[in-house]
Length: 226
Image (cartoon, rainbow, N blue to C red; front, side, top):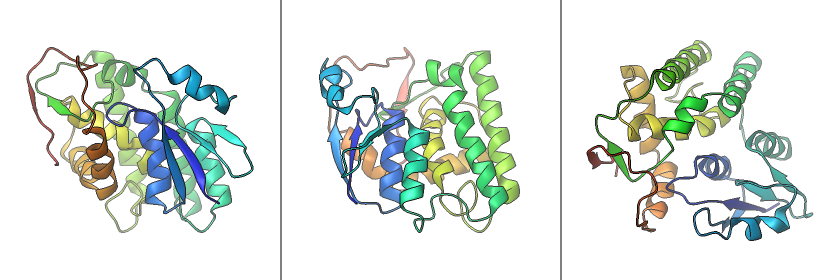
């Protein structure tokens, strides 16, 4: 089955990045369709995908449309059981699902204050106390995942859906120069240096924005991984 994957602007759409990584990192067949988030065309482009109303969304060959990242993840796992999308160990798998669920439902301060942008690093950005609490919670979850870790650099050792869900968080930590531990920074650098992430970012940089949607009013520096 070849999936039709609908995504938004690569430089800014964190949820789209998650959906794309699900396809790309697990070698699933897909076709990409870009939905404009900033040009006023999104409602018309999403209308044929009802009841999905946001990106990412996928359409199966039978015409079934699935929105919402957790639903997409579980559908892809069910239909591609040999892809290894969740950790093999049952305890690790349950923990990975917990991490993904909290990512979807939590961290509202981090997501609201530090919108994902992959163009540059905001140097010296001062995050709110609420955002810093979210950062600490993310680090606590990553440390907990480490209790189930096998060989490999990812949250549970081998790459899993947990890493797709937290890839935009890594981008936020790097892009806003947030204070994080050395262990968290190492994981973030592993994420943004991964070839799939770099390919996604490179495509996004082909599009220019004037004005840039998320000008934080602080000095900027080059993104650390080209």
